[in-house]
Image 1 (cartoon, rainbow, N blue to C red):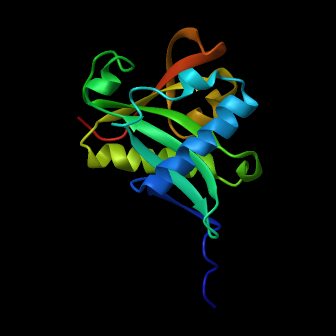
Image 2 (image 1 turned 135 degrees about the vertical axis):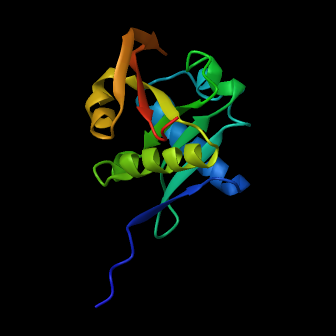
Length: 161
């Protein structure tokens, strides 16, 4: 008996069509559902970030996330160039509960390893702290607002220094 194909896969978004799908998921989730102003959802980091995409077997985009690294991440990681910054993690409403978010986090961590990074930071919406804690992230620092939504900084070491 052969195993069933996975209901979705994750990959680095390199083609223009993949990047467009990433931005569409972000628009649907952050702008449409969470009322984040569209003008702050897309920023100067998008062109140099590593974007990952989760897609269903039929090609439907299910989720996305991005990794900032080097100088782009320094402002979010306390200036440590060995730490990447995971952000813009979004899963479409119909794909929630399928493990897509966790798969995207792991895909971003894999990209961070390829870049030689030692850890990944993120700014989690406070309602999502448990999700990231289950994936090995640890909270540090005080709560702060981002786009009017309460957040906490978190970090996970991915490679011994």
